[in-house]
Length: 327
Image 1 (cartoon, rainbow, N blue to C red):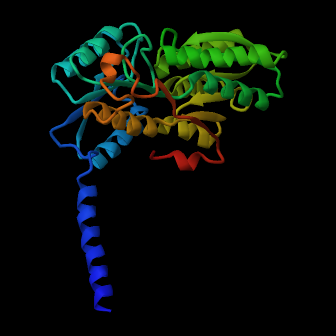
Image 2: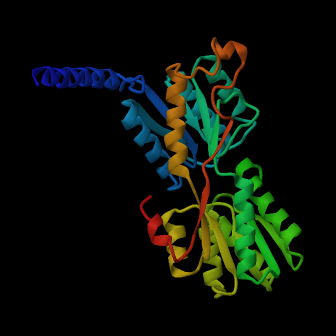
């Protein structure tokens, strides 16, 4: 019996010892390790869940994260902000790209200095960034087209309000337009307008679309502010119920319009997931925790991370809108 008790005590001591080893996991950094999220139109609600995800990862890792970005939809401004962040020598940068070509040079410059860069939501695919976490924007456009077609018995003129020149919006627009053209012979994309990522501009574009196409049955907007602008114009024109709106993202203004029935549905992205796993990827890169080969993967030019991670989408309607407030 004494031998048995001694054995139990030995196991208990070893367990405590091993638990101490586990606590010293390499997945623990320092508060002095600072990672940045860099966005554009930085004050909009859309980025909040992404940064919350990044903060959640930082809490688990014991590191510090900071948020910054261009205040406006301005390419030069975001380039300047990114260069200022790079000058601070952060542990890593999680970046969404206002323009894929304009951000290529500073991204590559950061990586040359040993600062890992991961992109999310909007990519710079020709840069040396390590990974890109985002919605499959083309697939999201396909889902929007099919849902709008279902609402209108697969017939009628529809419109599109998007942001030309920004890769993620172009992909959403392409998925929408090509699906309407290829799958619904009795439907037509009658008008495509530039929403300029602005509610007032989008409302004006929607108003002009309604005047030019009085038989319009629906519209797809590729981001939140264009959706709110379109909803405002449809409501002012007394066309609620006659013109179905499929929007994008889950800011409060969009959700309120879904709840009231002005917007029929909105596409919710996995933005929290982008922020969480984006920070995890950066931490692994910054701390040399990735060993895809037995040797220096940088010299061998072996990719240490998946080049692209699809973070998925959900369709938000009146039936489930309450679950998306406060995300």
